[in-house]
Image (cartoon, rainbow, N blue to C red; front, side, top):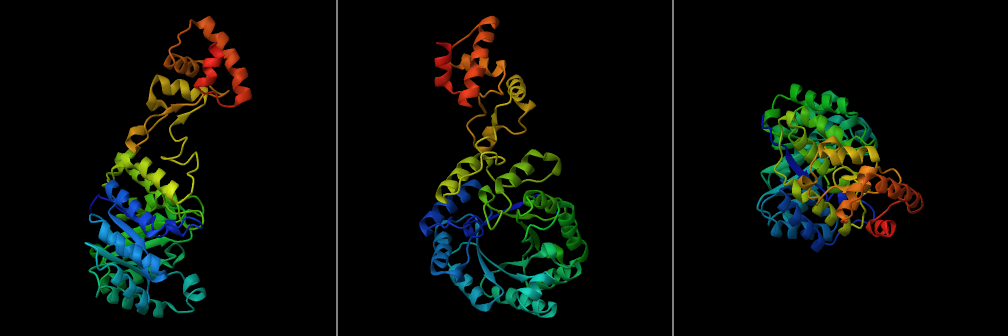
Length: 379
């Protein structure tokens, strides 16, 4: 089995479904080009049947981006698939992503159907999509809550019908990591033709476990991950691209790799945040404002002695210019001394102790002490 993990970015489709985060076609092209530059393998550009704007976005992104595969979403409905196929005519490498619910909850309550009819509809959808493109991905929606035996049967059937990728999504963010990992392992153990397709994973963050579930899936054989920049997406969001990429990069013992240029993560995160008008939380892993900031005196002292004491990644690896020491009332003498020396001030210990006492009084009032405050302090 290949050790390469393919990055399927759905920022422009699933991520854009967040209320208030919709982009124009022109804005989507800008983001798509940055995703291409970063090394994303597949870009899910939109859901063509959903609106004329989404159809146009898939067309224009197909014309503007050449390296990644361009993917268009559809339901397992002929009209959806026709729209996706038409929108992808200009793609150098096009993929139709079609599918239907696989859990009994969805089969009964969403489709008013039966397992047998769902199986027939899935096979027909894949076969119809193959008339437009060779690369067809099938999604078994709500696989996180699906019966394992039926999920394996469905997976085997769509691969036999021509699916090149099968997506096993935890659509509602329901699974725990070991549970989801076992689900992927079950697919590999019970689907006789699984070697003919790539198994993909698409996790939501309803319980805060999207990245953990995605990594569990990868560790059990999946080789495509469906992710978004900054983890944006429906409800609590999707798996975060930057978290998965850096987990694979840092945890070398996994023996896996991606083709992502990780130094582009921070700039692209900022671009997506600005364009979608959705701030990144300060403590967000990898790209948050505080991801490489230190304010506790104990942490600052350890970091200044050797950065690896408190940082498992080099900020340059993700495109962050440098780590920062944030001076607050929790900061220690070492951090204050370091910042004063950067400003050109050196003091003996007794003098520094006096300044530190005054610094704590200032920090209690101002919460965060910047360089201007320090100049005032030493004067």
